[in-house]
Amino acid sequence: MTSITCRRILLKLSGEALMGPDAFGYHGETLAGIVKQIDEVAALGVEIGIVVGGGNLFRGATGALSGMDRATADSMGMLATVMNALALKDALMAAGVPAQVMTAVTIAHVGEPFERDAAVRHLEAGRVVIFGGGTGNPFFTTDTAAALRAAEIGADLMLKATKVDGVYSADPKKDPSATRYDELTFDEAIARNLGVLDTAAFALCREQKMPLQVFSIFKAGALKRIVHGEAEGTRVVP
Ligand code: UDP
Image (cartoon, protein in one colour):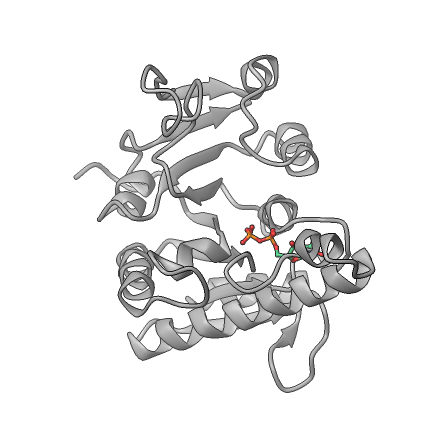
């Protein structure tokens, strides 16, 4: 295999990634597969930050649709991401991978409050740091939290794990002629209206010149191939 091209990465995992084929919650085998990929990369000495979503449990927009106040519903969504951070930490620790949860919303005894310097120290000490609670603010998403944490920890690369293996010219489930891009610039993604990340996250990555890799976490060994600089999914570059 080629040599490692990343020293520190930020991985965005959606809540849905944790539920696998189920409609809600956690799917043990899927979680184990994700942990295996993280373990493989941590074993190479790559420092790993993870921002986890909450869509497998609760989304603020769904709560608002059923009549809840949006900011309150978003607080519930942020708590869902903390639950996922704990589930992921538990699965990593059980596999022997040291991990620490840091939260953007302070919940004493559950996780450490997010603080940038402390996060960097955990990473340098070889712990996988799982950032729960999104940005800590309603009306944002965990994509934005991922872009923010990637910039804050000085990640070399942000990785967005999706169900499909990259960015396509159209939805491959609806359009059989859709083709996958191997590489795109941020400007091309905007011009082609590809919706790679939400707007705030996209703007932050673009401004910070943070390269982004969109890939499927369900392909065995994908994470390891990416940190070795091998082609996998789609790379969005400044
Ligand atoms: N959320 C929020 N602020 C943030 C990040 C997340 O309010 O900075 C809430 C929001 O309600 C969102 C939910 O947390 O719907 C779960 O996050 P997201 O939808 O991004 O999760 P994913 O779709 O990646 O699983």
